[in-house]
Length: 143
Image (cartoon, rainbow, N blue to C red; front, top):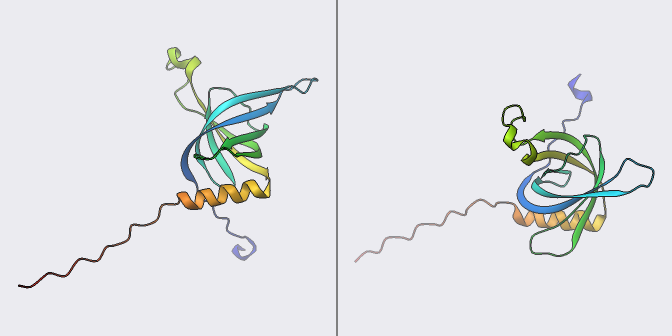
């Protein structure tokens, strides 16, 4: 039976702190937009983990925009919130922090322009940690 299934591999994630913006369509007739600042915790070519002080329902479709460090060209991605997670214990445990808590959300990327995908891929390849090269020891000098 195992022959019928293809093993899926997880995309390489990179721990990169990037400020971004999440834009959601409000659930009303006017089609208004809501925008939130977020901090990207990690990112891959298929998704990101972001942190924000705003509550976003799991299943929400959104526009996720950010600029890679050192560049001013924004990357714009359409994504979906696939999971949500509180950063701190619930308010019942720490009521003084209830209003200051940060929420973490897993976003899967659904649509991205080819140029943005290439731009992100090239940046992440550059950020990939390369193993340190072993420097050969210098031969001892004889007198």
